[in-house]
Length: 373
Image (cartoon, rainbow, N blue to C red; front, side, top):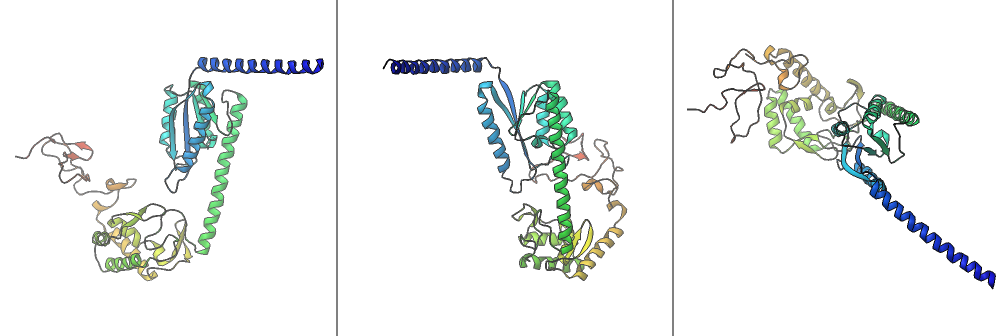
């Protein structure tokens, strides 16, 4: 009995000591939390392609990052900003506004930790990684990822980051090579390209003809060859509530037709069931034609003839785009009789009820406050 009592007393003593130890650890944890300096955490999320525009992949990354911040609350982590580049690739070199804003905030000293799902969300370029390493060293910023922290202040951490960036870039290059091979095979078989928006006149499968739109295309082709102006054809299509397919992957979120849009549509080889690949004719397509091939060739020939016969002032300037790409009659020769500035062409879409100030090119007229007598 004495041994049993001693064992019971020992167990009770162990429980008491364990309780005191846990209470002491809690107290230390609370003191540490109160003493820990706040860490300003910036979350960066990115997805290369968001077809639906709903940003679901970005939302998932953001949720995991915020969960990580909550788990590190004892260390003083505080979210100070969310930077998101949705549907922008980190491989192509395309401008990433939110990433640039994050880098600016790092230079301004507003960020202590950059948190992301993975390193490849931030960069897939070794050159960009080297710039990020230098920036983090200069401003004492840590890089933390959900898939594993990377200590850029240590040699091994920088080595791992460089390896990950190189692997990420290689993955994109191999994926691109596979995609190009797939496109080559599809072109040889005459199959349609499945990416992007649907073509006007065809269903979403790119193979089935939409009769209402196809009828409008055939009529527009006949009218164009008979001499009707493209601008008039565009107005008629818009008046018939047949908007062009310019936006959207899955819906016909169209806009009003323009003369340029009509010309591009009529000269598109797709409507003659000609498969184009890398700017060249790859052969007959697998989908049904809306226009006869002879009609398509005649439309293209007429467009080229119009371009050759266009007067010099209406031709494009080399290296220029938009309305500035065209030479304009008397451009730079006429002078404003009120302010003395050279008059240059400028297209405006001012409201008919709101008078727009006089401008010459991009310069406002000095007499823009002049009132008609």
